[in-house]
Image 1: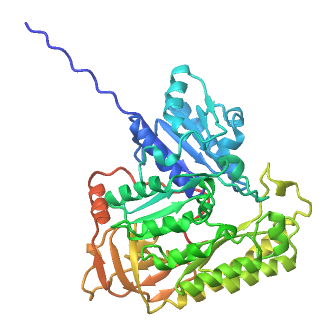
Image 2: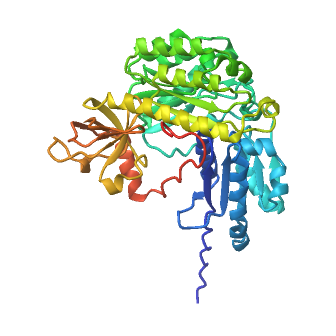
Image 3: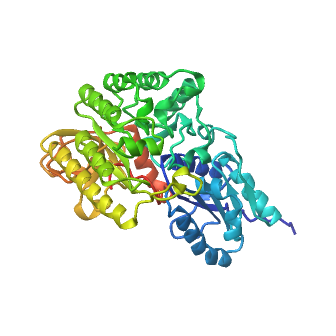
Length: 495
């Protein structure tokens, strides 16, 4: 009688779920965290399953960020109690700020890591699992530039490319420099090598990313480095669209405007935070520009690129803001003709100078100004959008941008100026909607304008199928669940 050897039972890989809160830099970091986990053998959990590891990549910019985090952790506690071996990790800006406080308030958390050492996550998870105790590791300096880490990108057609991390500014309302550190710049050759590699994978659009993106070059002493980088991106064959976010008015040089206007694949879209239109408030914020400087940049951009869409960030109710100060902000909104603005009510962040300033503006006054600002922003954006009705636009077809697409039988895409357009591909054109995939490029004529989006309900005028569209289609055959998206912070071009 022969005795065979039984095959060992295969070990099921551990699964993970990643929840991202915050800005584009957090989204970029999350793609790296996913890449690190998958490099370590984890697989993404399906939408209907409980993950073995839940990672929360946090934001610390808004006042309710703490409540969001601890609310999420509270909901996860009973889930973890029912699932042996489950681990919870917290990273990002709030982890950098609160450090061991997170484990004190939520002792069921297994790992806390900061903004400077995201590459440590797999090792910290394993150490916590083996030792049976929480691991808190926060570094005060950047351990590894995030872009050198493995990545699992969510989009086959668009990618973030970090040119720098950290910020050298000292805005009195902002806690980011304390959590991300001083600016560290990548070498131009490394950035272009990453862009070329992404295009080789089928990516059509890259967004150059930095806390203060147009200060790029400060570390190696070239104040014109960012304009040069934009022009270099123009020579990358196959790269259709280049964007960047977010620039600071202080560092905005004329050569950047020229590079935007003269480089065909750099989009005529500018997101430039204003924060306030009042010189007095800007001084209190330690924003090193004034209203005249801001409007001068806007005028130069419009002169070089009349079709440019300009968007911004605005804070209402900064300590000491008067009605006259607020009226100055409304003046800049009307003069700048913003296509959209991210509007925020000032919220105290512990550790920032503004939190201890006198003359905090009463909540009811802030709310009233906020509502009036939103009304002016929407009125201005709607007027800008109505001017586009009847025009042809090229769209990069997107996935998940139109929440009502299924009900309206439309698809959605981003125009070159980043406006969101919902299109139907009505019968009668040369091509039908069935032939279009996310990642493809289409031409449509705008038929309707709303404050936050455009509609094109006529026939498709043209469809260009792309490698990115092919990649999207191949993912559908056996792809994991689509991402859950960003849960807090900056949307793309609205609200």
